[in-house]
Length: 113
Image (cartoon, rainbow, N blue to C red; front, side):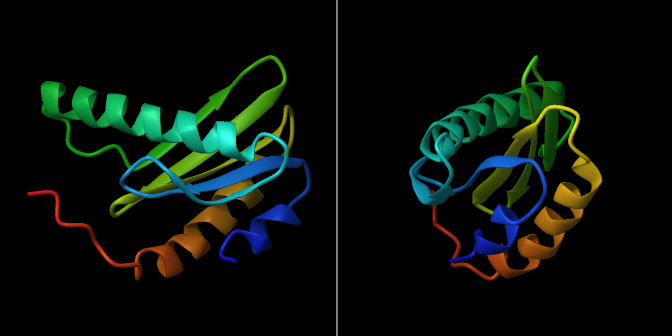
């Protein structure tokens, strides 16, 4: 499983890898499937925003809530992300995601025509 390396990071509550169809390819943790669904939704919104603003594709997303920190990357047709306990060190999570992105980028692309 591609997400196994992420589950051992300190503070990780959930992780997800989402395919271009919005369905989870993999998920980890109690909130993994919810995270997958929300990442798919955010990707759609952010792609639309980037097009409308003419700013290009969104490749990285990070936000904080009262209880968690979320870090996510868009890699080709896929989206992957982590939810960590608030105040966790997100640098190690970002580095792990970037390393994993190299493997994810080798997954087959989907023809959207």
